[in-house]
Length: 287
Image (cartoon, rainbow, N blue to C red; front, side, top):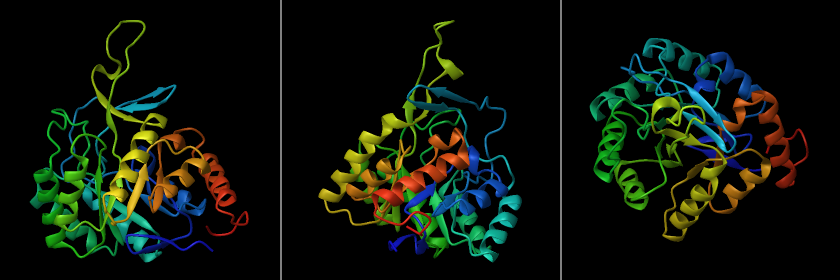
């Protein structure tokens, strides 16, 4: 049996379902775990999510663009759901963000009272109305350290690949992060062939296969530069080969999300089966 763990949780597989629309419902989260996911990250819980935005997804030949932000379900709903997951000892990671470091810290403290086992700080979403213009080390440190000051839960900080990543990772570590999730979506756009205008009316988050080479390179470089913190590799996972590639460059686990927008449960089971085969585990056995 493969010994895999993240954020203090032993996992049955090095495959974690990432945060997004598919993890905005308790029944989906439970079903994904029943199908064999090592853990599931909730849609990002926010005490004051933006209202009135045109939030959509656009499928591309090479992935997906999305203009979505945070869960619209109230914090009270999520606290009940997280308490239920905790009672069943399910490996669920709560994704959190807020409008300020103090608000995020208070939210994390509320989540800890449910018995939730781990957090992911979704602080790098670029889809809010004003965008994420300046994701810098000071900002990363402020959110991470404030959260760490209010909770003892293991936490991963989700960051996007790109300029200044090494300094942002160092800031997360200095702030008390226990792991890094790499990468959040990056800016992307598509042009409508009918109108010549940008689809979704702007630049929004890109996810999919195009991210994988960037995240593989960034993970490898972080390990070469001495970063020892656990890393959850995210971007373009569509097969067991993709999972194995992330593990090969130093990620502890891989997150899958965009691929699950097609045949969610069947796709997850296929990826898990391929991963077992590549890692030399019997089919049906825990990874």
